[in-house]
Image (cartoon, rainbow over all chains, first blue to last red; front, side, top):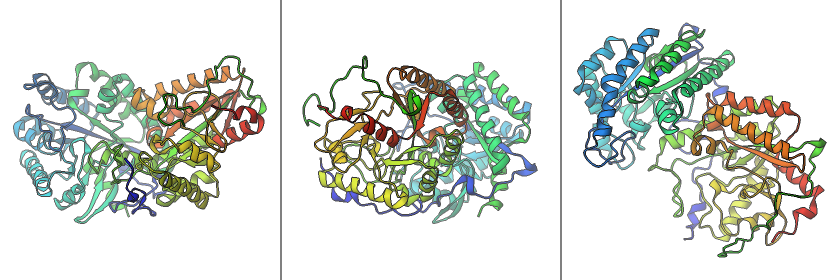
Length: 308
Length: 300
């Protein structure tokens, strides 16, 4: 099939990006970011709390980790719920040992179903951010704008009700957005989102409904990517995070504060055979000079006044 | 190529054993070239009926943002490590990057890197192009790189590795000397074309960082070990007749914080070894064409 002549038209071929959400920027040419207490590297841990209905939806797409066998898929329904019953408590205990406060990205339906878990997360001093309704609440082009707006509102209301505080951060399922998402999140009053993985530090986006911060939650460093997709060992994961930390802390000496982002899934990292290496990683991080753990809200608050 | 035939007729069969000797400058046994892909991907490109641009409906936020990381973060980290250890880049360039992010192109040019074309965008594919359209992207590439860097491109790596039956003939006709799209050898080889003279420059899919991390699912340290094994074998074999090792990179992959440290160890190892001619693809092509002109002719 031959191509239409318009295939060689390049309407957005100009200096800068091919969209208006944010300008291009070189990390190494920016004003250095200073973290509270002169920390050099902040580790931002985001733990996903997800409830997968045993009746999966493919509209607009099926979430990663969702049901795979013919109905009823007890195998995946229960092993995902294992994370919410057992794995998360192992992670919470490990975090408590090193005094780390984290962001917990929770489905609103999960928060309503498991109030005891939400209460334990809040009591431990962690931040709860919004992460859609349940794991059928995926977002992509094709989802009508009014439905997406309602999904975001339902997610925020559900967390506010369960946690007693309205969330200021948002993580989409699979970090997947429509063209409308940044504006709808800004319109909903959110301070930050985590979906755009194009940087090592937060930056501000401009939407028709006002600005919103993007805190890039590195998907390449996530437990899902390294342990599930690439099928590497927990010992290798721990080594990779230490290598990442070593590089970032070295850069921080000359270029200002850096951020190490760990996106964790309780049904992946929270398994018995993986916990020793995870605790070893947390302990190693905690003893590094100039290191601190921080929540997304703390990072957003620290960085916002320093951005143009 | 011979369109429609079972053998495309790109080159003659030449067994690895008992080949005439290739000598690289200063008695080096392996020519090592590092090939960063400096690319621009579009958020909402037009559809090509032969290949989808993104796995998801536009916007594919993770796919796009991951690649955008290259121009904001990865390039600068990767380029500094390369310069520190004396490795120039031979850039596979989405030439529209000259318009979108001229700072990255200027930085590479200032470091003494060579540019060859990797199409206009890595989200525009050659599949389905007629001859006039394909000539237009070749002419656009030559003009855009010359305007932005003063360099005249010598090589081609098809955009997202999408070819037509006439690509190799056309780039030879426009005076380019090498293609990176053929993977049949570890030494430069003549390529059959309608006119002009073209050689195949050994590139590599197998040790491309994309293959390492997403086809073979290697950890950063496993990938580094792989590159050193590749280097050691080609450096040893090159004592008989000079070999070529290419390290194709994407800075949104190799420039991630967990990967750049192990990769720096590879560059340190090769730089210290002494057997490597650390150079650029165009310099390899020039050396081969100057010293072995008879071996650059006579394909198919």
